Image (cartoon, rainbow over all chains, first blue to last red):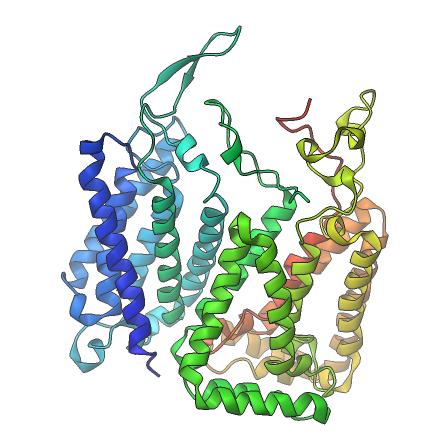
Length: 219
Length: 340
């Protein structure tokens, strides 16, 4: 049973919007000297493009094997960041929380691996017109676990949306703050405000919801 | 009235450079879990199968056996949805997504929780036929009393208000409500023994807990529930092989011992129901039992049918577990960073 074409089109348009917006963030961050999580934004550009292509066949720009390699590298990157973050604070331009992005890369790999080859008339309708392969059915519990993680991540991101703590917590140029009557304390506040933290959070929410939708389609 | 949330919106005050993000308080964590379940519901509603004839047929299937006053609106709404299934299903899914995001985003948590109550009551009637309770077909293994009514109950129990001022975060309390200076915060018992009691009070919370779990115990002993094996076997079509293997073997084992299984299940429900009246340590054991029973139910329900591609919600298992966590006996409050 195929879902409505307009529904996958909406999700694809949302992903393209996120990809274009995050590409814009990468373009202006240096010019405006406003820090951002470069690896997160780059990941969102790639994921947005890949997910749009999975949802609507006409938007595919790269073969599946290429995307698999891209997200395997992405997963390795965020896994390394996760390990490093346990020892010291991340650098200015790296994401604060690599775990959700690691899982996003893993989910992308999963979806590319379990879906049947994107060829033939059935492929033209995108992911909504396909069922998971036999292998995917065997590992569909993984999709459920990842989907549950994603909705939890979306909820937590939305919880923090109005607080502005996303800006507070982004590590930036180290500045020395002298606490009243106390020693000098190192601060990880950026010298300049974080680039549009609420929009960045909205991108994460949109990405998380769309990814959950796609994981549900693979069940 | 303050929301008594540990992580407050700091728009009105600048955050210190060294100030870490405060931990979520238990009620907020449970609210976020509820919001996440609504988001999952919304995404399940977007599945391709929900845009076809199967969805209104499933809704219409909950009408038989109910009194006419209950059944006629169900049949009418199912027919109406059948004529406009694509648009209406998309609206239903969007509503559930908005409820989830509304609960997760603090400025709209009250509006979303109120909406959850209204939506869950409407769906419980028109979508689940009141869980089959009046039709005599309700069985805990089948999802009685209906997952959606538990959403509404949780929305009430997790309402962001505190019946007793002592339960509010210290910064939210009026000076007259703060603990005496000679009594250390660690020695002060929480006025609400568990999260669910914060908004509605202990008695109402315990009454709701009793209603749910004693109700499940009664349903477990009804004739419709004694065919536990058949109920579990009915969940296997469309499941992945590993889950179908578990459910098939469980079904065949329970088919021979249906009455015994029903009695054991009912006994477990009764023990859980009485748990909140016990001292803290045995109460915690009862809550753990509740979570285990919920997990077993969820397995018997085939994980709500989520892995078959035709589930509209995760069924009662996860919601009963979340409800149990709302009744976890609270310890004396720990000293927070902001307390003096």
